[in-house]
Image (cartoon, rainbow, N blue to C red; front, side):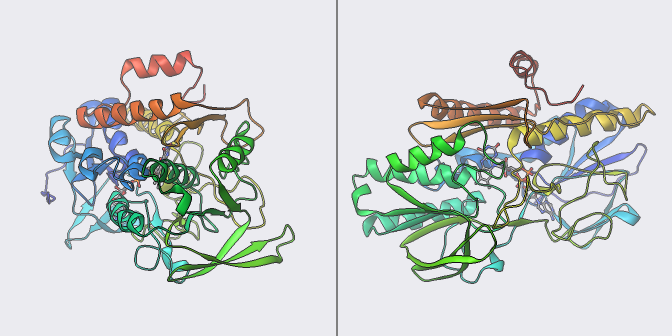
Length: 433
Ligand SMILES: Cc1cc2nc3c(=O)[nH]c(=O)nc-3n(C[C@H](O)[C@H](O)[C@H](O)COP(=O)(O)OP(=O)(O)OC[C@H]3O[C@@H](n4cnc5c(N)ncnc54)[C@H](O)[C@@H]3O)c2cc1C
């Protein structure tokens, strides 16, 4: 584990907290934006970056964890970014200081919070890798799920996939259901596996976005095609060993029906909340522990604090019978990164921040043999662009995206010029102009 070295401070220090999808590229992009005028410091809790969108593939052994990980210290050194994986115990924004897990402290002039989600498995009895269900949220969880899936295939039975009440990330649940279907067909045991998709969404394909294009029609049709049954507006009250206790909720909030759904293998996505290092800080986070930000990604109470990615507080698209959160997807996160880098540069130039992220959702959901893609601009309806499409090309595009993104992380690049050009040509921008 790399450790924090005391340093004499001759220039402002920008700490990026969290070395995941958003934090890693934020470090690169902020480094490029502020050049040598500030020290950029990435404070992570692991030495490795892991490409979370590949987790559904890790969870059926189509990828090993090593194939989707990047060792960060050498890249950070090459890019002139200070790095530690000691982890934050607690952020103290009033003191512009982070208490670290080794008992020391790291002070900052600017802080970019990119800590992603804390997984709220404890909110439902029996839920999660400590209980009776599998997880794909971390790559290590996905590797454990892959082992459980191998054991399952030797003695198959019913499968449940889905997302529980309060979840905000639905795409990976659909992906994993379809990937499991594809893998079970390859093993010629699909006929032994009844599959049920259980979701808090009011309809299949809502995705926390009130649908994008025809995601409802496409995903319902894909489920019919693949013999996957579903429950929507579902609330899981508990999991026992082999049984999920599920309530179907009516539009008025009453319980319409109760089901005890048997399973031999289950993966349901949990609700997210902010991580303990930032949760419950007055003025910084909302009651769920997500960071409050203005249109410049800056916290109103502590203006030297910015936030991006899953750590950011975003209100739901509208009321639903069961709580459904808004997803924070990769491209949307990259748009937040670009806005923060531009705003920090403006501050270094003695100007006011003025860059706003578009928060557009551009997503590829892989089915293992095909997939669906969608573009939502803006993310919350009504939209200027509301497009979805399906086909084998999506599966190939997702593989290409994985390789491309991992290459960017290994090389220490955030957005090479050809990516900027391609996105501009497609009319997909990261900043509002
Ligand atoms: C299984 C899955 C698949 C997904 N697939 C897609 C996809 O295909 N396309 C898409 O657009 N989006 C996808 N997403 C959504 C989203 O893009 C990812 O969740 C993305 O990883 C979120 O980025 P982030 O930087 O906000 O958080 P993360 O990538 O989770 O990074 C947060 C980082 O903060 C670190 N951290 C937390 N607490 C501390 C602490 N106290 N001190 C130091 N470090 C800390 C964590 O270790 C982690 O590295 C997926 C999400 C999941 C869960």
